[in-house]
Image (tube, rainbow, N blue to C red):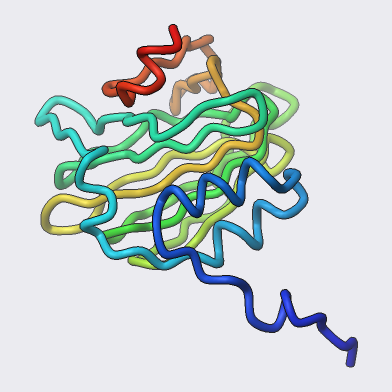
Length: 187
């Protein structure tokens, strides 16, 4: 059995969103998996980033820089994403509150979408996705509001949306519902 170093045995616990962001800034992307798993903040830590809509889930920027993008998605009951890819970047999703169904598809040589996996994630669970694994959609299956934290290694400004019936993709420019004042001041 391999011997784990002390960091792997007991990852540091982040006490605030600022500590989480600082760790992401200071480390390279090979450490993002450990970092995203190392924090366990109360739901109240995310209140200042929340916005809600009955029309669609919201994409609320916590921070974006050249290295990564950290977004809080806020979901009403039953809301779901279209089937999408991640523009070639890695994506970790940590469930802050609620329960989600993730459906993963692969596009075959004929351009058809084939369902490959469905899984359920609950509060505290983490999923990982990168384009070679396929494309996916997420759905809030909780009976109420839910939140998920999305960490992208390098910001994603564009992705492809896939039609479930035809498998055809359409490019989509991504935007935020809310952006922190500090980022607005830099623009």
